[in-house]
Length: 245
Image (cartoon, rainbow, N blue to C red; front, side):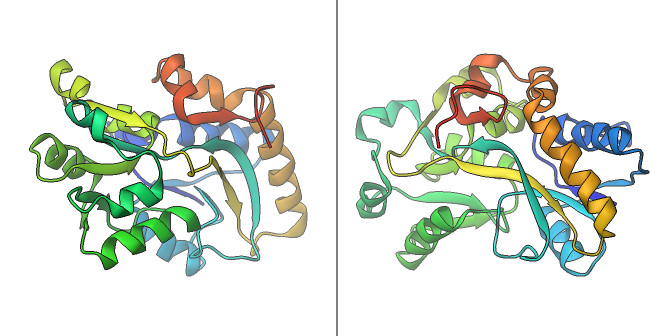
């Protein structure tokens, strides 16, 4: 079984079918490995809970602390989380995490239970300690609150924001801008393969997942729903010669 959580245009439900780039990546992986696949779309918290309880064999995510350290992790892309804010505040936007923490008049928003790297989690912890961060239910709520000027920023990737903002009109979309924080580096997103799988099965899945990350499969799947210039803002594909260590 593979588990995914709703992520705008990347994973979604279409007429009771789990759709999007990541579900189709899993389907192609199962086809190449010659193995059956059952795919479920669940909220992030339930994905983590079922993974920990042994209810799933494959999950896409970062290297969060909640995941099983004994599972195999196969990177498929690198992603950069950015500072998202109203374009009208561009001249005052912090350039790095220290400036953001010190900017006491900027209130932030994050989704409760979102998968975070250690670096972003540390930033979130510092902001929460200063009572500068609100945790909300989903990314749509984050974007609505930003547009309503109930907060000044969130931490988001442009690709994810593109999918989650499909309900906005053009004027609303153009109000929000994403800008890198200079000290937040790209981090790996990959497939976690359960340690409960038989060794020979895990070996096959690792082999095919790694091959698919390097033959352009994920890039092609994402390009169906996202313009190339958008993907270039925050994603580094493993089939790209432009990747830096």
